[in-house]
Image 1 (cartoon, rainbow, N blue to C red):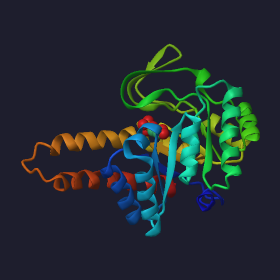
Image 2 (cartoon, helix red, strand yellow; image 1 turned 135 degrees about the vertical axis):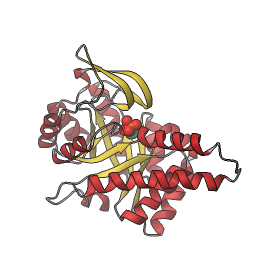
Image 3 (cartoon, rainbow, N blue to C red; image 1 turned 60 degrees about the vertical axis):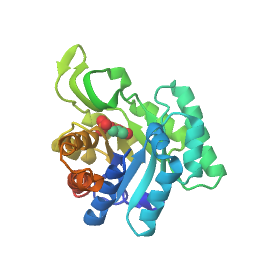
Image 4 (tube, protein in one colour; image 1 turned 90 degrees about the vertical axis):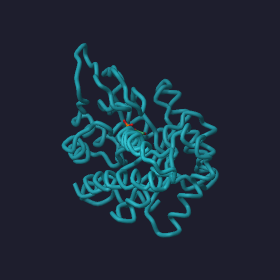
Amino acid sequence: MEVLNIFQGKKKKAILHINVSTFEQFKAGIEAVKESKIPLIIGVSEGERKFWGINYFEDLIDEAKERGIKVYSNADHTKNIKKAYEAIDYDFDFVLFDGSELSFKKNILITQKVVNYRNKNNKKSLIEGELGYLTGHSDIENTIELKEEYFTSPDLAKEFVDQTKVDLLAISVGNVHGIPQKIKFKNKEFKKITLNFNLIKEIKNKVNLPLVLHGGSGLTKKDFIKAINNGISIIHINTEFRKIWKEELSKLIKEKTVIPYKILDKIIEKLKRKIILYQRLFYYV
Ligand code: 13P
């Protein structure tokens, strides 16, 4: 698939992945790509798909593509195999089968089934596997406990990729979902996430495919640049955009007007600016 060409070549770069559950977030993504001319992956988790209606979401993406806008759809964190099949049937550009809560063997077995389903049905969706556990939720969290046993093992990553033949791999290298007030790790408390950049490099050296970093909210510019330089090709950011949406809406809702677009337009502009900022940072490292 043509999107994979982005990750070829010597120059290191990554693509931003955002999650959307409102039309404002979706439109901000489209407007950002129109201005930046940098590809964007727009993802919807199982919950977000249910909220949109999977057909409505894919129609919006298809319509944007027909107008030449470089956006790609992702069925994010799909834990139910039937939902993964459904996303493949709907021609999502990417489908993440997230078997990270399963045993290693079972994760391989079910991820293989998803890849086989795509192949058997001559579908084009790229399949992302997930190995290592990502704790937290895409929300404002109090304390998140991180354990070293959650991290992706480079050797197991190789075995996983060889056996499943996935196209991309999501890894756990200290990243968490959400914006926590505190991180607990090895009996200590931290204010900020510390990624294991060497581990990213080790995994990248073992598996020759694009690596995906979930849980981008709360990471710094330096973190992103180092992660990309060590082998990350796609970066997911969700909570940070959800937070902007809520904060802007809470401010603007107090205005006297009852005309939704006069309020929502301002949220879209704010989101769009932030999306472009990350797109440029990741793409022109
Ligand atoms: P954050 O909510 O921590 O940015 O993570 C998003 C994500 O990884 C979605 O797949």
